[in-house]
Structure formats: structure tokens, C-alpha cells
Figure 1 (tube, rainbow, N blue to C red):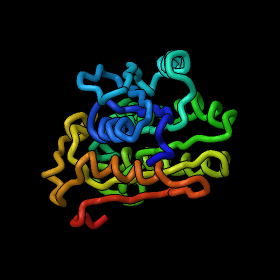
Figure 2 (cartoon, helix red, strand yellow; figure 1 turned 135 degrees about the horizontal axis):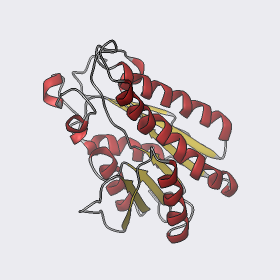
Figure 3 (cartoon, rainbow, N blue to C red; figure 1 turned 90 degrees about the horizontal axis):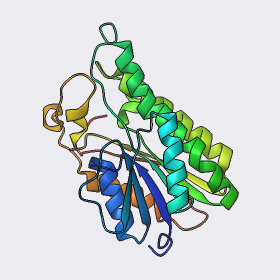
Length: 234
């Protein structure tokens, strides 16, 4: 716990669901936390700031970088949580919607890495967390574009880990079905956590997994965590 006190963190997609739960846990652990989200956040955790930012937009990430560095300073922790879902057949889908998913789930995380990891390298320490999905390793009907975006994100995470070790730690957290508004905000298709039928994690369950990785002492890296409901078969 003491390792985190006084650290600074940026959580993208931190305005709701898993991201907001992570921001709350970080705040409780004594971390000065900044949320970046496309919508204003009404109920911020204590000692938490919020900036508007669509991570799919290069200019908006540039603005976020300038504002965060100016007001808070270089983050020690970067949590790439912003993401969207899509549920449609590949042979019938809309390539414009596919691009939206890739721009947010993959390119958005890359933009944040490019903006904030150089400062971690200069400081000689830091921790980057990527929120992936069990879908990254299990293809399923109607889920090809979403799963592909998360599979690519995990390749990015492992590449980054190798490029920045040993000073900077990199963690991938891959949740199974989680009960959030994610399903209500898919680009196309309609699902709920209940429809899937495996039960569901809470956002706090996933946030606890993230905090477990962040709390490890110097010299210890937790690089991959998979967390899912007991009944989920993949």
C-alpha cells in the first residue's frame, strides 16, 4: 500500500464502469488521480481531477498531455481503460464502425503511450496498465472486430514491456463478462451482461486486480491477469 502513496495516475475511460472503479481504488490508496473521458464526470472520487478527452483524437490527447503536465505533473501510472464494443457479423458489418473501435481500443492506447511513456522513461520509473479482454484470446461469432482490437492491444503491451524493462512495468488485465454500461454503448449490436448467461464481475472486482499489480514491490512485475466469473468457460 505504501508504494502507491503520493503517486500520480492517469486513467483513460475513467468516467464510468471499470475505469471509474479503478480511479476510486487509486484515490483510496493515496494516489493523485486524473480521469480522462469523453463525457464529464459528475461524481468524482475524492482528490481526483477530470479532463475531457477522446483518446481516438490526436489533438485531444495533445491537449490532455499539456493540461495534465501543467496542472499535475508527469504521471507515474498510466491506465489505458477507454474502450468500446461492437457486435456484428464480419460479412455484414460497417467498416466505418470497425475503424471507430480500432481508433479507440487500439490507437487510443497507443496515443497515450506515445504521449506519457517518454516521461516515465526520463524519470526512470512508471507502470502502464492495459485493460484488455478474454476476447483477445478467444474468437466468437459477431465479436471479430472487438476481439481483434484487444488481441492487437496485448501485442502492443508485450512489445512495450520488452522495450521499457526493467524500469517501467507493464500489466495487462483481461476481464471476462463485467456488469457495466459497456454493453449499452456498443457501436452496433445489443447485449447485456445477463444475456450472456455466465454471471458477471463487478467493476470493483476488476479494479482490485489492477491494484494488486500496482502494489507489487520494486523488482516484481505482474504482467498478465485474467479475471472472469466462475461460470464463464472462456
